[in-house]
Length: 123
Image (tube, rainbow, N blue to C red; front, side, top):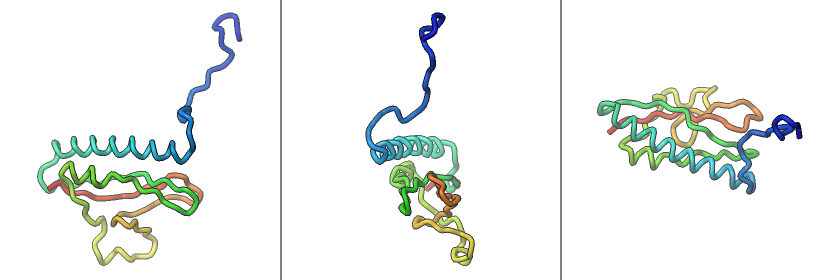
């Protein structure tokens, strides 16, 4: 401790909540679903009917597993439907990693969080 402040150092960061890494990641995913639900509720107020939203959602990687954000139900409840990002004729083009939800995945090898590019249309 120093005489002036009583502190020698301060540590700042997230993740100090304890618990396992898997539990913390599940908590982060739940928080993000709430965030995206609120965002799409706002988008619904701003966009005209049939307006599109193209968005990047995080995809957490754990070894070879991908953990997709379970936000689709909340987005649909806000008045949006998922639309294919690519026309059918381009969906099997080499170089695109497609998600099981008709989006495009991208990330680098060893990257912990990838991105899923998705398109939604206001009903």
